[in-house]
Length: 279
Image (cartoon, rainbow, N blue to C red; front, side, top):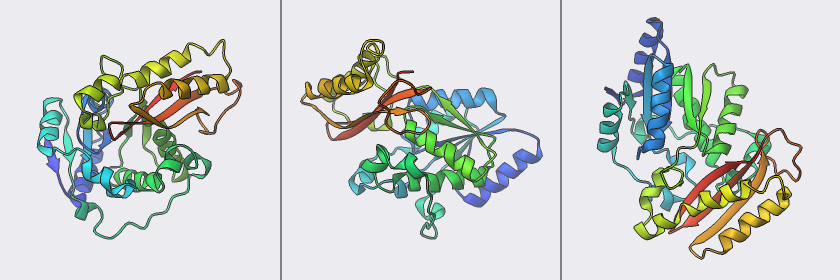
């Protein structure tokens, strides 16, 4: 596996790959790799000649300095995992390399960013778009791979691609879960053993709520989920919204072609998110 640390070297490598007529798959990450990342990597390997995984903890998408400082980092371990799993290139730039000049990009995603994560984390999606757009420009990737757990992020990245006519195809992969149902996340590493045993309740509550889609209204399902979280003192529910799966706007009836529930909950000082598709 090749490790690339500079933007110029990445651009040159990707231009050579293109000249050779080979396809490129991009897996943008912030490191602390887990099985969810590896499921994306394996998908990318089956669909591309060359797979590039970026590892960069992007400071401009953190609105909470403490969260940035606590974000798990172990580059040596991540590189070993990537090599063991057949990644072709690891792009591991420094913050100084990526942001030699303070980023000034401003993106507008309209109502897509005015709900849920956009409300809870001001500036977050502008920071995400800043690094993702740069990665797309540098790599000219044929495909880029994202997990569905970060549902709002996926929809916004698709809108980024639409706005700028970026030729990269966005491949959305299903939520990868541990055996007990907890959605895999780098932040899971920060949970104590005791709280980690409680965390699967998030998925269990959402899964149970989906069993009521034929008998309860969406507002009743929303109330059910909110009340379920109140039963567990360890959880602090930040939001639970049932939204249209394209506009991300809250829905009150079942007329939408696609409906998804999105949740953000605090446990043990760690912010966890998950989704549940209803239709």
